[in-house]
Figure 1 (tube, helix red, strand yellow):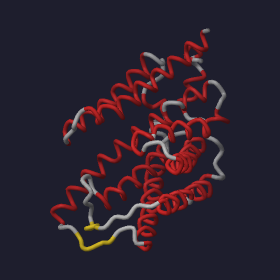
Figure 2 (figure 1 turned 45 degrees about the horizontal axis):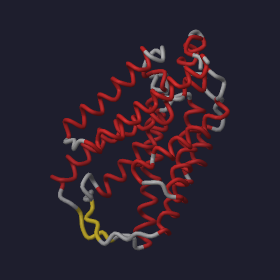
Figure 3 (figure 1 turned 135 degrees about the vertical axis):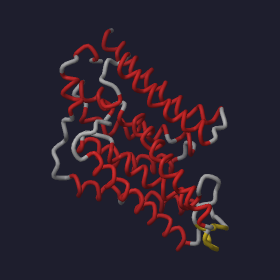
Figure 4 (figure 1 turned 180 degrees about the horizontal axis):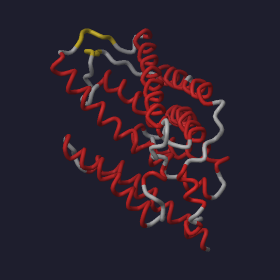
Length: 269
């Protein structure tokens, strides 16, 4: 019963954070400053829940520890995500999914990209905390890391239905991306590279479409079709061999937070 009670506690915490992140923007229209408060508020809620309910050290136990190389992982991830999404949009352009008729003025591009650079970092990190970082200490403590990639991939694919709905192709797309992101967590012991990949991909998306459908370029005559969804899946699948080659020689990392967990048996589920 004790084990079931602890597991239930972790599930409740996950639902709390997930609903906070996904439900609030759907109930309330958030301008820049309110959105920033909402994003910062997520980290406050997550930290307090981790520290005082789950009895962890705080956000660092969700894979956000600033260990040696964390910034390098973040930046490598950013480059991978940005270039991969660039490849995808290039493929879409060559296939005729949209037309580019011009370039927006610098007075629009600069503030939009600056807002995107900071906002997408916060949003990407929140998503990775919820779908991967939150479950990292639980799976470590209970010696379940062999199932971590499968579990978090399913969680991520289901969570993405908030944005894209539940369709076969979207589930496959999210699963393909989720496997790559979870693999980086297993190999590095943190979620920094996963955040970077998310961040870079989201930055390229904002460069294309901004926050209101208008990005750096003037894009017109957008086309829809299943073929584009499969191209998106195919290009996204290229991320895994890249991260595999980069991390294949690393042993699965035992981060400082894991050592802390070994000394706190009261949080076992």
